[in-house]
Image 1 (spheres, rainbow, N blue to C red):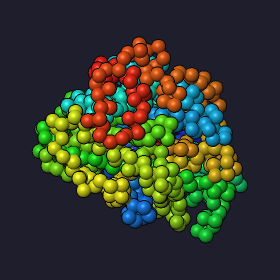
Image 2: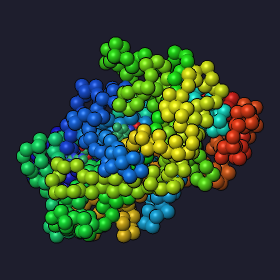
Image 3: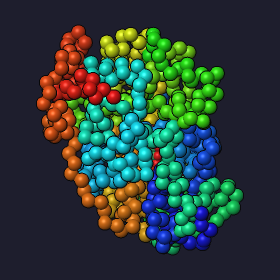
Image 4: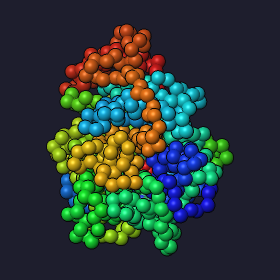
Length: 610
Ligand SMILES: Cc1cc2nc3c(=O)[nH]c(=O)nc-3n(C[C@H](O)[C@H](O)[C@H](O)COP(=O)(O)OP(=O)(O)OC[C@H]3O[C@@H](n4cnc5c(N)ncnc54)[C@H](O)[C@@H]3O)c2cc1C
């Protein structure tokens, strides 16, 4: 790694997901000097809590890895503060996240492009960057196609999902009227499938491991860990550098041709506000000298909330026994020496996307299935066997904020998401729980179903469901959109250059710049943004737009890519049976759309059963 200088062409604040990708791309030209300031420690190769996929619950809540945020009391969550983990280590949240890789629906990007100024962020402009960043592996083989990449730094491995409970889940989804799909990141997101994960050869492949470590020997790239950026310095409205606190003690300053903020959707608006960029009505009473009046900084906060619907299993097939303390040394040894076994998986090996009502244009619900009943923090409702789905609405219309409350950069900012505060959000929550239960109560689960553990039979009416959600829901950990791209008065970031409006020498590249949260986990979209932003910052010719088709149910698109022979196959009896009154005793929004599902012959015969 290069020696420390007084000034760099680019100072990247935050060596997290986007920061690592940018560090790689910006330092590719040996004539460009790049410094990464990361508040957390290094992701040492020997650290099993970062690198062992199944160890993912351990860093959460630890001050050694996690910023440990919590919300203000949420008004519609019984005044509860919701805990928010955020990675504080090289690789950022990608070093502690669940490793689930979801691009979001192509129509998410059409929605982005519907905002003035974001025309170049539609799906056809984003797809080439999704492909550039990834190498997809399915069952040990490279699996690039028209939708997927085959030579990018992020190696993705598709979950094996071989536990019989996954088989029951995929079967049950079809019985409830929801099709399978070949690839939720490919032609059709809608449907159920095995999931791609940032796991390679049994290890987590974080953004740091994929993008940063391979280029750390570049003489023009330097990374400083334990370096908390405390302020962006300005001359007038031009950013000149960054003040930072090294190892909690020594104050340092570094000069910058450009400062790129990659601190994530909570810390980036915090640092902007500390540096005098934000709403003067908020900053001046705190004694912050205003550099530029930009009221959108910290506003427009979005997220996904989720619950776990947990069942006991009558058959002893879940992975619960493998997670007991006596079994852990064996699992750890198997992982350490062979990179195999229960330690080598994130367990999120499959799930799916569905529409809970016909008002929505693309799936508004996401399901993660786990062959065990356990919460993120490791607590379990049963000592025996179980299984669960994580479920929640994917584009809630609630909006929140992140705001500093004093000028000490070591203090956490305040934040409020306003979960469940809109009628539409509440409606979708009730639908989400009902759809999940409908799937979990299909005949495919009959041999396993030992009864619902959570929320349990006492939670039936809409009000009971909402009350349970208020008490039980957790964040899916996707805060975003607090420095949104756009050109309206509440926008913060210019979509064509990632520059912060109204100042020079300052850009933002992380989850803050999303205008709207996408309909799945957001790591993949963050990385796509970083890849595209690198070209915008460097002035490279952007990758040519890609017109590869994708599924839109409103347009009566075929269920499989145009030309796929499966589109012509008749619906098998089993899919038709899924709509029989005995299985669908009450009306379901999808029952009216059998025509959508009829051609799903191939999936339903099991030929592409994940
Ligand atoms: C526990 C957890 C599980 C998740 N699971 C998934 C999942 O399975 N799939 C998925 O797609 N998404 C998941 N997410 C979300 C996803 O990982 C994040 O949204 C994404 O990685 C955010 O990327 P980012 O670049 O915006 O920020 P981060 O990756 O969080 O990077 C920000 C970096 O900036 C550093 N930083 C912040 N402030 C400063 C400062 N002042 N000075 C210096 N450095 C600073 C931080 O320490 C951090 O390293 C999860 C998140 C968490 C926390």
